[in-house]
Image (cartoon, rainbow, N blue to C red; front, side, top):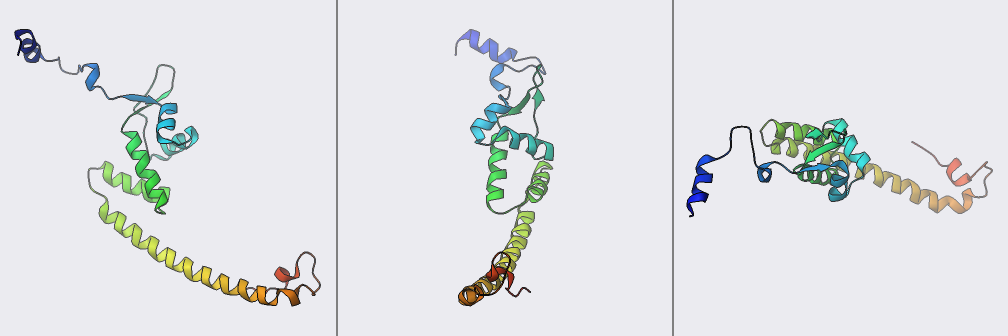
Length: 158
């Protein structure tokens, strides 16, 4: 190693000073929007909900985000795709932000989601039976007196 290079390594940087290469990359909200493929409005909403945080504001007042927010946004979108609510996601992220792994909470939320899906399947099956019965009686029901559509107006509801 050249003597000059060794001297630079020995000197280092004063405390609280970092060369540009180690400072986190800050992205404007529009850049985050483009890279995350999310509307700016959604990113602002997530920030308002506490799901993400802007690292700072520019002198002009623009939100500036660390590039790590992109991973967090991907996590939020994956969680939503799996049926978790924003409140569920916020709970999970809160546990993670405190330095713990939220896997136990995730398993519990998924178990609740499975139970909810099972209830919904039963409801949908019942609705399908009702509509099938209405379709079988539709031709006769069309002859009944009604203001808009006798098939619906004369349907028995639970």
